[in-house]
Amino acid sequence: MVAPLISEDIALDPSAFLGEYGGYIDELAIVAKAASGETLYQSSIAPSMMDKENFFERFSNIAKYLDISTYAVIHAFFDELFHKKFKSVSLNAEEIPVSATGFICPNKKGYWKYLAEIMVEIADLQVSGIILLDFRYPWRKYCFCTECIRDFRMLENLPVYFHYGLLEERIDLYEKWLKWRSGVLSDALKYFINHLNSQGKNIPVIVEVILDPISEMTSGVFEYFGQNLEELSKSVDGFILNIFPFSTIDKDVITDDVFTGIISLNKPIYLLYTKNLTESELEILKEIAKIVNAKKIFIKFAQIAS
Ligand SMILES: [Zn+2]
Image 1 (cartoon, helix red, strand yellow):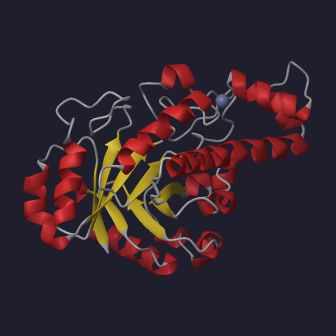
Image 2 (cartoon, rainbow, N blue to C red):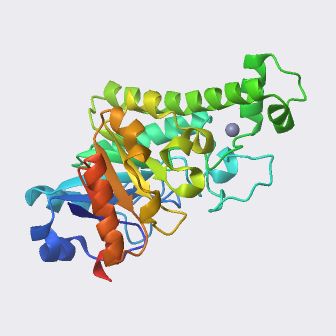
């Protein structure tokens, strides 16, 4: 039920790791494109992470011989390298649980092309699927970069001085804006999958969904992160629920009805936990896994070892 997620900050040797743990695992998730924007494989377009230029390939090649499926994890709309050029902008001072620095605006078509090429490269590395982390807006009230303001203003025939305050005054406009920005994200996903298919790569794509009480669990992802799960479900091969990344895990808020919506979409569901894991938290994760009939619980490897 539990499988390791190998992130970019972990120092280990792929062969030694698989020699030691290979007998206990059948699936494995490895970061292929880090939050820094660097890759852990040899890319022809992105810079490789120092000392990890072939880390991913070594892992996935050996794993294949051991009948272990490898999932490539990509930080999608988070990239410290290109953040300056494509950053997501908010005009509001709302405090958010994690910094938005590093988040890319999902409306940047230049970045779509870049990420699509990276996905094509990764599809050639003996992988069973691609997991897109950070496939979202950083928070509510994003993005108000020049392009987003221009595109939405033109679409709705709004005055040149359009700004966030106008959305606060007019609920109808706010709803249109939410719908518009979720459409941008859904279009990006379609673009990536079409591009993969056009290159002959038919690889499953799984999208991260944040599950946290601060962002109102699954019912909040539309307003907080711009994710229209129903729309996304038409393109993805599964969702991976990132459990309580901003809060301490709390059994009481995890009820069956939190998951009704996402279960009804009929897509494979995986779980992800990225923090230190205690025995009791593992029990809660297993309970969630039971409710959503999860295929796998991915846990950051360092946490398994500690
Ligand atoms: Zn934008």
